[in-house]
Image (cartoon, rainbow, N blue to C red; front, side):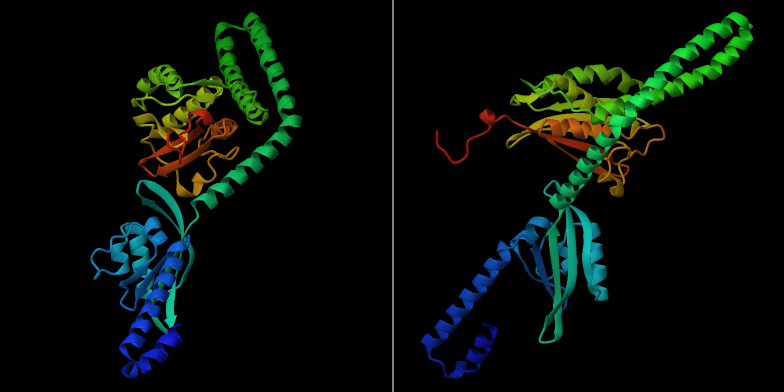
Length: 386
């Protein structure tokens, strides 16, 4: 097409008005077709000229990137409304470097997306005439990879559990019983001072036995099939009960608890016992993230065919490199944590056919967002007039 236009332009002085009109119609049709192709892509394409001014941005680029190109004189990095991304693009374009598959987290319209970006020179007639930025949304891809890793980890954990957990739990129970017997014998044959000294050491042993026992119990809970007992109900009722239960603990560590529960939420199917356990684990996790106090918020609302439940804190946040690992068994950043608490949460939510995601920023806080499906009968009918 480009060669055809070049040839036609050479003959332009000799063309009639009708021939010129036909040429313009043909060129406009081709341009419209190319724009349609670009806007149909599910990747973002941004093109800049030699001065790094915007030439074009397809529809998906405007969805993925927070662009503000009302002023056509701005450079590419000045029309991108994300400071980190803008600074990166400015450095790359001014240096003339190529970039392949660089990943960024970008917030746009209240949604946090993981983007993969390629930046390369735009070559025309063997000369660099500008730059091309290719942007791909890999949020779902990374989420699928993380889910697959978690499922694989849970599968391997289940295989290991059968031969190990009970072998550990039984000796722990025996140790605890015999330590109690030892304490009774010592109390009968030693002075009070000696008994107190020995009890101090045996008390430490008992504490460690109890800690190991809790780990084994969590381990067994994580790997055993869950016998769910689903009942239809309002999730807000469970949250109110949980809030009353944890309020004294929150007050004792200077944490303000807030509820922001949506009104008229549809009933959903859930196992109250397990949902309470999942939420309690998330609350405990938030408390640990706010050693100097803060705010813990539990919110609910409806979004399309799902009920959304969000547990947010104003704590220390989770490093970006740890977010994809946070639900994996035995991954923990706590000195005394078992690394199974959030694994249990993930397993419970998956048993409810739900999803759980994380938003977190260092020193700003963390949000766990749970999506639970609304039963089919309560979903809105689309495309039919009633």
